[in-house]
Length: 133
Image (cartoon, rainbow, N blue to C red):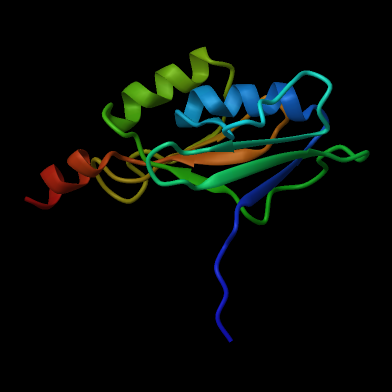
């Protein structure tokens, strides 16, 4: 058996607001010909470079426990710490700071989006290469 992931779905209470928040974080855009609007219960965004899509879909129940699946984000150009500052200024909440836990320059920071969905910010590829080199 073989399958591929069509898109990633995030349950939420306000699909439009959360999709707009994540568009800024990820640099994603609306689907061509299908713009997201405030009254939409389902809002899809996509990465203009890779085509990866994330669907935000409204559900009646609120988030109640830790995510079993989450995004691990790697900054496209900034450092992990610079991106962390940007994310917090954009409304993310720090849940757990694990920087340096596994030695100098290692680890990540666990954050939550405005609806409490956890995600992590990792070191950039340049930071990882610099430490290995």
